[in-house]
Length: 284
Length: 158
Image 1 (cartoon, each protein chain N blue to C red):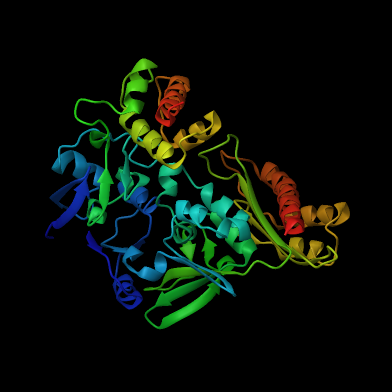
Image 2 (cartoon, rainbow over the protein chains, first blue to last red):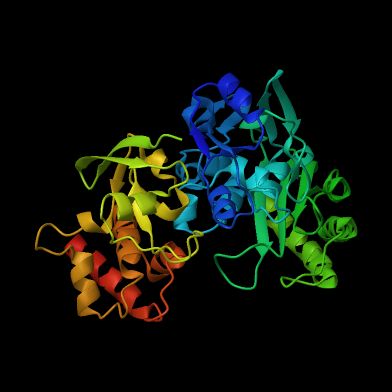
């Protein structure tokens, strides 16, 4: 195996276009899979030498978060947790303190697990990935990146440089909740991210609901969002959203939960998550 | 494939080592530098026995490539005591009998030190969550948590 640490996106793309190349960001999934011989890359391309992958910048249009920025760095940012608390909470649920010191949004997404905690958080927030590749740079909404377990909509030589998170709406709030049978260090049985915006009268003007671990990929549940838009997010609207969330689920049976259980939990979790997002939106 | 020549700082001392691309930082510390305080437990980032600080950040050294330490600052359990004088956390671990077999202890101490550097007055809940990535199969954790709380109080001068 070769280790490379390019300092430009062009050099990284060229290396990644080769056979058997893998991106190294925090390494908390890649190294585990290499040790287990699930992956045996010929070349590991450490993207942390590229400045844009390692920084958070903020302007009037929102945040640009480098793909290799760690969970601990997201939490320590002076304003990100105030603007997008749900996104930061989702990322901070990944693994232990030690894992938080390394694990990144880019890695969590590109590891390709339907249960990745940060992904519904990003989808709800409306995150868009900036992807560099041999033909230049393109953007893709986060919900369109993972296609199936371990399968991504990235072509040879492409990698995610950063994520664009829009500016939080004036009266906007987001939240992420997951169900696990213990309190820490576990993988989501169901995860749910919700971001919504209200107008001055408290009517919902935008809502995005995303579910993890209930299908082959994290889902943007458009109908669940629609159930809230134009309402005061009252009990009737929440009930409609809950039903839409359950209707979108196509989960598997496994040791973490049955199909029936996951579908049921998805609705309950969506309602609880939306309620927290609503409280946050009302406070700002 | 030529080995990588890595220049780094470990516990304040400049060090150099040669490593293979796939060699973990943990293996480099143990096999190349004879710093065998950090332990290999699970080798998958679940147990925390290999905990070290990398540029001040608590990490599992089993999930970092040795070559990634180039130009960085690594702190291990070996740097915790000042000569013969134990760090307050180490002393409190002995006083509270917060260890039995000792395999997890270097990782727990490094992690606890990182917590107290960030938060000198943690609640018991904060200690438990911070140390959730450090598994101990002997103590049942209560003695570890008590030792950390007591050390924190002493270090605050309380």
